Length: 563
Image 1 (spheres, one colour):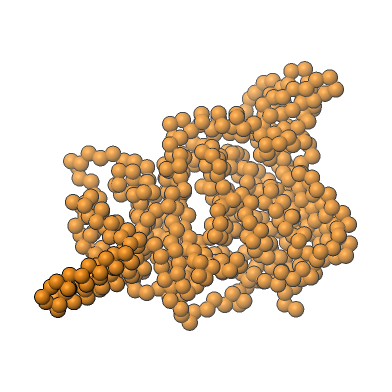
Image 2 (cartoon, one colour):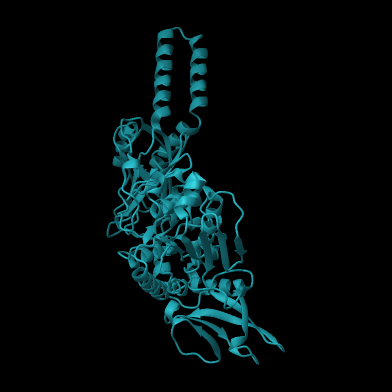
């Protein structure tokens, strides 16, 4: 009975969504033909009226939850219960996107400014209801007319159901997108096994002397006992975690010249750690869209307006609401603080940063900021422009703006990196002793640390917090911005584990917690990036980066746009 009901329910949805126009034509045409042969045209007319009413009902079926309600009550009443009796013998499987369903909970029409509530019912590969939480989801609404999008707030009830809340931020259509990124079995494995396993990232270390060269294996290692190794500790930055290489035969440890990521060794180690859990990260269990009782919503126009210009200025301790904002025509509209839009005016940007020393440190997301700030300024030749992979410096006398970017050590790269030329964030901060304190500090330090153990990352971030505290004592008014992680692209099964979005979400929580009440402006871009209408990428499009920079500039110079 359950199978027949399920099939009927989804066949009706499919026909009503795909073939409604063809169906209507066939019914009307066939009845007109029959009318020519029937003695009673009245009966034929009644058939046509009924067919047209049915077509009209099915046409709006997919966009009006209230019209689905009578059938849903009938369907749910006849559908067998998910409860398992003592005599039942069942198998339990991982959450399966093909069997999961969402249901729009709003009754009646939805208007601009309303909150849309959607329930997710997780089911396993045997189509049984899940009774535990822990699945990792992405959820967003998007529209082409107008060009708008927003991410949803997801609450895990820890019983196999989830509540997603969206803001109806515009009038018009909104398509529902709910993605099962990882089932709970995968997230549990990542938190309890993978995150706490040492030696997940490897490099080839190239040692060189006038008479010989050697290439050996290097890794990041937690405290322990080892022999015949070259150890490169940096306690003030990494704590008890060390960069460790096998001792090259006949060469001193001081002869380490270069290093690059050892991809083959990383893949081998990842396969070893995965063991029989590999299937959890294969395509069928990763990043799969789920279906629901309605695919497209319609938001009616209303008198609701969002007074975004009346929001408070961006400050370190400004509370961030559960629904953080929305995109409209390639502009991000945050709900927690005011983002000024004057930064398309290069003179405004230059006035904001005049006489400033900007230090950007961390990973390649920070380098994106460095590269995108320059085009926002007036197009004048730079007096200094140094560009290396590990260090960049730019200076213009016209506005006396100095900008420096430094990549952190132990970075993941497929090309050879020179050892000893990269700088830790703590070292850079401790060297900033200009009494004028005309600094702007931007830190992005997360993209290369999903392979570290949880304890090692927590210790590293804690030491960075201590360096920030020392800097704040010297320069209490200098703005400091810490960029949050965001979802990224994953090109292989290994990447889905090693650089998992779930792991990045955990790093985001750690960064926010450790830097709470630090005076640092936490630039949380997670929902902003999920909602943007493009594929997630480690390096998001310029449109996104510029809007992030507009948030930074609105914090650094919140009075510049007032005149």
